Image (cartoon, rainbow, N blue to C red; front, top):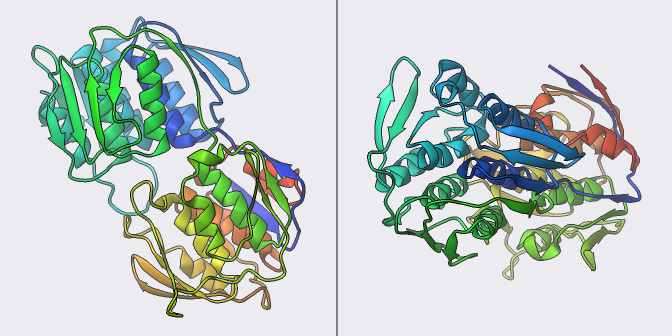
Length: 436
């Protein structure tokens, strides 16, 4: 287990460039299993979750060649079907949340797949019902294997396109079903589909491989399956969660910072959500400049009441940024209600922020009221433990603004989603050291 030691109170300066999007990378890398031809993917983030998924593909006998720091060539022309049915494969999948995304491609390509209960963040129950139900609608028969402690999915005569209405707009569930439908016979219609930029990017890649997909960017998708997919070349978008994290860092440390090449048009409501906290973002082409400010004043509602910032399916605010927005609000002027609707344990990390002097009232597992300190009373240093990726980065942001030296344990969780964050932040003025 690794640890960060952070000396707070240092201002950031200069420019920083976001990594490739983690959630998109997990989807498009899994999609290489759909074809026996080479697939080249650019802007792959060098983070733990992506590395573990690539290592899983290697164990499945996918040929992987690293062409440069962030570009890989994949070719799944000789999959090891015996390994994919092994206990080791299921065990690996159980330790990696992103492994759920290989199920749809394997089921479509090989006619069978194990679906292990996935690992990942400790943020509450994460349903896989949407995946299982959607794949069964395409014709998969499902049984639970006690020995493997995993679901076993198999098809007889291949997958068949159909109409389905998803019970929730699950991003990974939608992606899994799209990938399975790419090799299904006929047309698959998915209503209440997730429409995040990650899903749109997956659809663009599959379209370049020969699949017809209608409804891109909407919650109604039609996928016309094909018998065989070709190779492709694809570039991953910048990570919108990292962009939002850098905005929060700049505001909490009252630093001028320019975030380069953010793909602004794919950020959706994120810039405006931070503007509601009083952060005067400036768009400069495809960059965002966060100027230094004396005061960040939270916008009240038109009737003067306390505003609510809540997550919602795209194009609403992504839940992955609520932890960052919550910690940013602790030093703004005013009050705000943070409503995290999706996960029932994601806000429990606020106890550590309260220990640092933040004024936060945890109403219930989903809601917290933040009373901003307006930078008049700095947070105090603290010793913390990262329970998940997003709480971990929120703790890191808090420590960067705190008075004194903070310690964060279990930062391997942060490594799962943020590439060499200590080194990259150190280059723009942060004082962070790592102890392994």
